[in-house]
Image 1 (cartoon, rainbow, N blue to C red):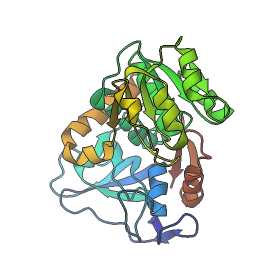
Image 2 (image 1 turned 180 degrees about the vertical axis):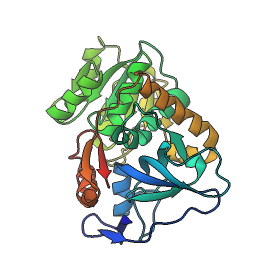
Image 3 (image 1 turned 90 degrees about the vertical axis):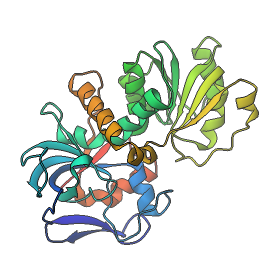
Image 4 (image 1 turned 135 degrees about the vertical axis):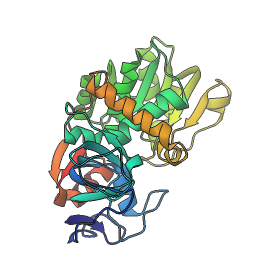
Length: 323
């Protein structure tokens, strides 16, 4: 089988295609034939050696995939050959086959394609975890989403809208802003030409927003924080723009709450609760309550170029690799 191996930290020639024997499942293992593997910003950070949870080279990148169970080991009773599944594996998904435990799999309905199945888990899992467990977003509240044209931001817009919230998108290109609006944002702000705080307050008749979902960090975080109303909540999601330095008086003087959202760190401590959460998201997608954008499909061998685009913030929406 083919795998994409990160031989050393970096993005480019360090991601190579290797051939290896197809593994056979041992006891309590499930082998999945990968039909699509999700590519994420986290995958790029790990390959570049810049993520807080390091993966030591050589290793196979890729945290999520969708495919078909094609072999099961002794002791596996809940999965059968031919089952359509989504797999959350942390790493190893950039391959023709992956080995998993039964607990890493969620059933994928026939109504959801493999490309969407491979691209929703990280971004929708983060948004669901943020809006339903780290805080509670209420109908009618206004949520400001930074980085709104990428996969993480688009999922946040979709989940917030499904909960009855209004959404203001912050995105740096017309293409990204248009995509955010098509997902359900009612307004969009260009952080390169507009002051986020001023424009957000104009869009809320001076009141400010209830929640900030900050995907970007860097220079965007402080004006986003300033856009909050009294007693607003600031959700820390990520830092592709750099780790922000926020004046804490903005928190104190307005009774604001800053909330860290690290879904990946929560999952190992709550495996069954997480499986239930992902199954709920899958059901919402299958029933039409959530509407993931169709991801761009690229060959598995394009992994290096795809991760470079994600790290360079050139990618719009989600991308999956097809073996």
